[in-house]
Length: 622
Image (cartoon, rainbow, N blue to C red; front, top):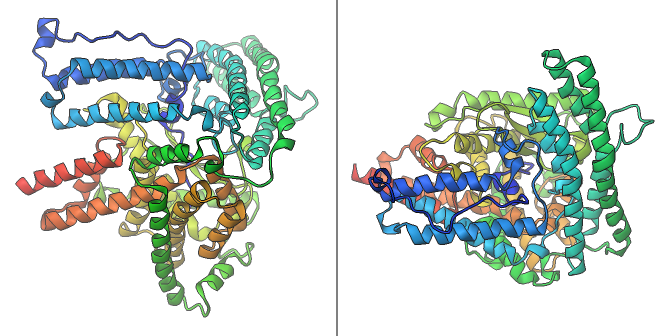
C-alpha cells in the first residue's frame, strides 16, 4: 500500500528550456486546397501535433524519457524565468486555438482534446499565481535526487555521441542545481520554507550523490553517477564502438565534469540548507501558515483532484471512508478467529517485525525475496488481464530496489514509466533498506497498484495509444492516474488476487491508507493539525508501522493536496461503474467499461464522467 512517486509527463514538462519554441500568433491551416478539404477536427488534430512537438522542446529530459534523442546533450532550464516562458507559450497557443477553430464543428473526441488543452492551461495559469508558495526541493520530490535518477535510468548510450551527450548533461546538472538553489532562496525570502525534515532529507540525499569517487579520492567506491558512466562506457567498448583509449578519455571527461560542475553546485545547495536549518522550527506547519496559504491550498486541491470539492468536504469523505473500511477489516479479523479488538489486531500484526509470517528478514536474502514475490504476484495476475481488459499494455515491467542515494526507510513504493518505444521498461521501485517497514500482507496490493492492472497498465496504454493527439498520451492528472491505481487494487480481487485472507486485509489497509490521507492532508493544511496529530490518526486507524507513518505524514506536509487524489479518483471511477452497470444492465461489459476508462489517456474527472456517459448512451442505442 505504499504509493507512487510517479515520474509523470507533467512533472518533467513543467520545467522549461532557456529558448522557448517558436509559435506563430495565428495558424492558417486552410490556406491550401488540401487543408481546405480537411474537417475541423482533422485540422485541429494536426494543430495539436504541431504544438505538442513545440511543447516537447521545452524539456530535453522529457524527450529522453520518451525514448527520443533530440537535444540529448541538454538539461531543462529549471529557473523561474524558464517556467514563465513556458506559461507564456501556453497562453499564446490558447489564443491561437480560440481564434482559429470552431468548437461547434468538432467531433466529440476532438472536443475532449480541446477541453483538456484548455484545462491544462487554466490550471497552469492558476498555479503560476502560487509559484513562490511551493517547496522547490524536498525529501520527496526534489530534482536534487531526480536529476541523477533520470540520467542513470533513461539516458541510453549506444554510440559515441550518446556518451558525449551524457557528459554534457553532467555539466548541465550543475547549472540546473544552481537554478533550483536560487529558487529555494527566493521563496525563502517570501516566507516559504519547507519543514525541518525536508531540509534534512535534501541535505542527506545531496551528500549521497556527491559521495564516492571522484568526489572523494580516498573512497573505495564510485559515486552512483560515475559508476553509471563506467558501466555505459564499458558497454560501448565491448560492442566495438570505442577503443580502450577512448573509454579512458570518456571516464576522465566525466570525472572532470563531476568535479568541476556537479560537485560545486551540490556543495552550494548543501551549504544553503545547512546554514538555514538552525532557523527552521521543529514544529512543522501546513499550507495555511504560508503567505496566501488558504488560497494556495485550495488551488492545490483543485489541481490534484480535478474537482471543486472543498477541504471540509474532502475531510468528511475521508472520515466516512475510514469508518466503512474499519467495518470491513472487522469482518476479516473475526474470520481469522482473533479474540480482541481491531486495534489489538493492529498491534498484533505490528508486534514482532521479525515474525516471518508478517515480515521478510532484514537481510539481502529477505530483500530479494520481496522482489521475487512481488514479481510472482504480477506474473499471476497477468494471465487474467484479457478477461477484464480489451486494451492491454505492450511494455515490459520490472521490479527493482530504489537506488542507494535516494532510498529511505518506510518511503513509498513508486512507479517510473517506461519509454513508448519499449526500449526502457516500466519500473516498480521499492524502498527495501528497512524490511520492518515492508509487511508481507500489504505487498500484493502494492504490486497491483504500481504494476498491472495499476500504474504500469494505465500509463503504458496511454503512451501506446494511436488515434488521439500525442499530447494526450503523456497528459497527467493526479486524480485519474492515482484513482485508477487504487481502483486496480480492488479489481485485482475480482481477478482472483488476494487468496490469502491476510493479503485481502492488506488490501483494506492500502485503501484505509488512502482514506486516512483525505483526513490527514486536509487536517494538516486546512485545520492546523500538528505532525503528532496526523501520526496519531494513522495509528488509531491502521496497522501501519510507525516508521512508515512518520515518512508518510512528512510527505503530506511538503506536497499539499497530492495525497487526496487517490481516494477521490477511485470513488469517481466506482461511481461511474455503478452508474454504467445500473443503466446498461445485461449490456454492461466490464472489458468495454475498462477500455473506455483507459482508452483515451489521462483526463480530468469531469471529462472522464462525460466519456462514460457518452459510452452508456451509445450502448443503449444499439
